[in-house]
Image 1 (tube, rainbow, N blue to C red):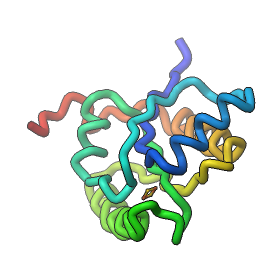
Image 2 (cartoon, rainbow, N blue to C red):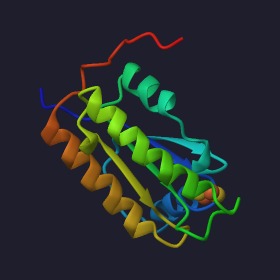
Image 3 (tube, protein in one colour):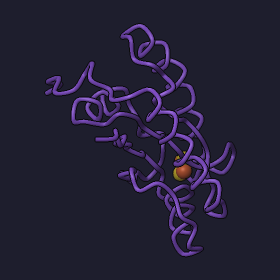
Image 4 (tube, rainbow, N blue to C red):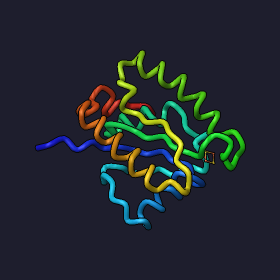
Length: 140
Ligand code: FES
């Protein structure tokens, strides 16, 4: 059976979630491998959320919010970007290929971009294969 990656997308309510909604209302087709988790702001992202997603079966992730200077909470996306810099080093140290995680900005007007982000992430993770290293890890 062909491997179908499971992708978790952590998205902010104000930009990317609305952009993904536009993808649907524009009838743009994209890979169905993504489960979305909607945050008020990507500033909420933390390392344990990523690791818990891997533990619960995710093979890859997308973290996406408002473009720089468009965050509804002024600087949440800048906090997320700084954290991503640290997360990336930690993940590399832990042996997780950081190509499994896409960190990006998608606005409410970028439905086509959301489809591209999803499709390219699914293709990358499909090529990498299943992420088994931290599956079923207990982070409670
Ligand atoms: Fe969208 Fe902060 S509200 S990233």
